[in-house]
Image (cartoon, rainbow, N blue to C red):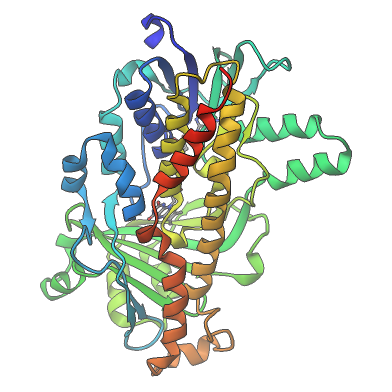
Amino acid sequence: MSSSQPQNRLRVAVIGGGMAGLVLTLFLQKHSPDVQVDIYESAQALSEVGAGIAMWPRVWEIVVQLGFEEELNEIASGSAGEKPAFTYYKGDQPEMQVAFPTKYLARTFHRSQLQTLFAKHIQNVDQVIHFGKRLSDYVAPASGTGEITLNFRDGTSATCDVVLGSDGIRSAVRHTMYEDMAKAASDEKAAAELRQVSVPIWSGNIVYRGLIPVESLAEDMKAEVVTWIRVFLGKNQHIICYPIAQGKFINLANFVFTPEGEGTQYDGPWVSNVSAEAVVEKFGRWDPLIQTLMKGMSDPLAWAVHRLKELPTFSSGRVALLGDAAHAMTPFQASGLGQAIEDGFVLASILAQPNVTASNVAEALSIYDKIRRPFAQNIQRLSDANGQCHHLRRGGWEDVTAEESSRGGFAQERFDAMSGLLDAQVKWTQESSVMDDSDEALRMVKALAA
Ligand SMILES: Cc1cc2nc3c(=O)[nH]c(=O)nc-3n(C[C@H](O)[C@H](O)[C@H](O)COP(=O)(O)OP(=O)(O)OC[C@H]3O[C@@H](n4cnc5c(N)ncnc54)[C@H](O)[C@@H]3O)c2cc1C
C-alpha cells in the first residue's frame, strides 16, 4: 500500500471501484502525488455490465488529459469526429421513418474495455484497490478532526482523512451521510426529509439490454446495421442502437416506459434475465428489421432503471459523493458516467491544491458541492426531458396514442418541434466545457486559509 510514501498531505478513501472511482483515482494520482489514495471495492474483481456506453466531446476533453488518448481511440467506435452522432428514427411502425438527423458527435465504447483500460493505468493498482471490502458505514469524529473510520461488512476497518463515495446508486456512503445529517437535523420533519430524499426511485422504465455479435448476422443485415448510430422513437418505448468494440458488436438498449410507475418503489429485482423472444414480443408493432436485430441479442438482461432525487448536498464534513452515488440519472442524455468523470476531474483538481489539508478539506469539498451539484442536477432534469421526447410525450406528440403512433405515416413537420427540443437539450455536450467550472472551483479553493 502507499503507506510507505513519506508525508502524505491527505489520505483519501475512495469507496467503490466502478468507473467513477477508477477515473477519480487516475486524476488524483496524476495531479496529487502527495495524496494517498485507496479504493475499497465490494466485489472480488472489477466487472462491468456487457453493454455499450457513449462519451460526449465535453467529457472527452478531460479524459484525454489522462494521457492515453491513443489507447482510448483504439477501443472507440461511433462518430469519433467526422460523422453525425445519432440519427433519430421513428421505429414503432411497420416501416421505420427518418425523423431527423443531429449534428452531434459521440464516441461509443464497450464498457468492460473502457473499465479495463482505466484500471490498467492506475499506478500500483494491486496495492491501491482493496477487493472484497463492502463498506457498511463510516464514523467521522464529531469534532471534525481526527481519523475517519471505515467499517466493512467482513468485520474489518480502515482509517482515512477524507471519504469519497463512488459506490453507485445504492451508496452506503450516501446512506451514512444522510443518516448522520438526519440525526443532527433541527426537527423530525427535516430529519424525515433527509432520509427520504436519499432513497432511489424507479423511473418507470425497464430497459432490455443486450449485445449482438455482428458476425452472427446475415451478410446483408450486417452491412446495414454496423453503420447504425440511431435512436428509434416510439410511444412509451424507444431503442438506442450503436456499434461498439470496433464494430464487433451492436449495442441495443430497448426501453419500455410505464408512466404510473415513475417515482415509485420498484417491486422486484432491479436486474433479471430475459429471453430475446420475450423482448421482441414487447416491440410487436415495430419495424421487422429492428425485431430481427433484437432476436440476435445474446443473454439480454432486463434492468429496472432507477434514479436519485436531487440531493440537497453532495458533501458533508470530510465526506463527498460522486457519480451515481450523488446524481444517478435516467440514461437519456447518455451522461451518468460523463458526469461522474466531470466530478472526478473537479474533485481531484481541488484536492491537488497544496493549501488543502485535513483541517480545511471540509470547506474544499463544499466548494466541490457548490460547483458540481447545480450542473449535474440540471443534467438529471435534462435527461428526464430527453426521455419524454424519446417516448413521444412532448413536442406536440402528447395526444398521439400508441395505436395512432404505430400506424406511422407522419409528416416531417411533426418531427420539427421535437428536433428543436432535443437539440436545445443536448447542445451542452458539444458546446460547453467543464474547464470553466473547474477554474471557478480552483479560484475559490485558493482563497481558503490553510
Ligand atoms: C441503460 C443505461 C445506459 C447508459 N448509458 C450511458 C452512456 O451512454 N453514457 C454515460 O455517460 N452514462 C450512461 N449510463 C450511466 C452510467 O452507466 C452510470 O452513470 C455509471 O456507470 C455510474 O458509475 P459509478 O462508478 O458511479 O457507479 P457504479 O458503476 O454503480 O459503480 C459502483 C461501484 O461501487 C461498488 N460498491 C457498491 N456498494 C459498495 C460498498 N458498500 N462498498 C464498496 N464498494 C461498493 C460496486 O461494486 C461498483 O463497483 C447508462 C446507464 C444505463 C442504465
